[in-house]
Length: 263
Image 1 (cartoon, rainbow, N blue to C red):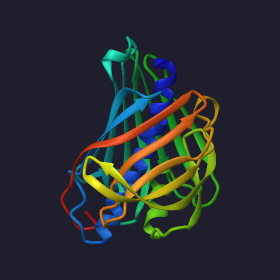
Image 2: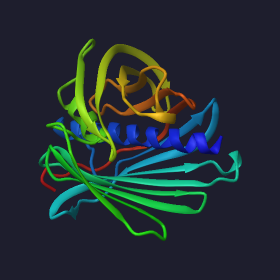
Image 3: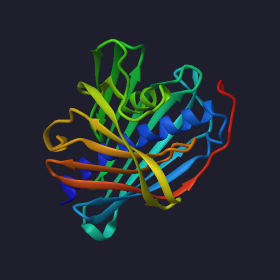
């Protein structure tokens, strides 16, 4: 169960990070109090059992690759009661608020006391430099030529949200994961009311088609739910992978502070 859960959790963390990017950026455009300091905590269930948590925090402005960015930090932890294979992964996306895009990411993986790291630098819309390193081994590097307009999953989700959301709309965006490219397809599938940790809220139901492979291949569309108010808080994700079903649900939420777009 641990081996299957760690793979599914990595995909959910990526999706949650993407949704939080879009929520922050869209709220800034609308003049809402989102930005550094924003934090969301999600309970992750695997096959109906609470298997861990994912916490996503918008960090303070910093410099990365010579440019001012907001680090969006996602930390996923397994629940110690589900087994003896501890998992603690951290994914950091570097959001360039002025350019409204992600400049790249760092992924720190710690599973069963073994560590590895992946860094992606998106130099432009067509090239990505990837560095991977396992603990105790030399790093490996690769450069990938990408379809025009490629971005990470977070950037693609922001692009979807920044164009506005309306029932029935459909979008496609090229996404690069670090090893492969695919088209993210999204369709707004209407509205409904959900009971959430924020209370009963009206939400947009959005279907996402990805092209994850192997254990992360999906049996059907991933479904994500965003509140329809100006904050567009992501409150729930439902996915059914080959390795089993997984649900991430918002349990705690804290707004951040508003800053200038070039901060």
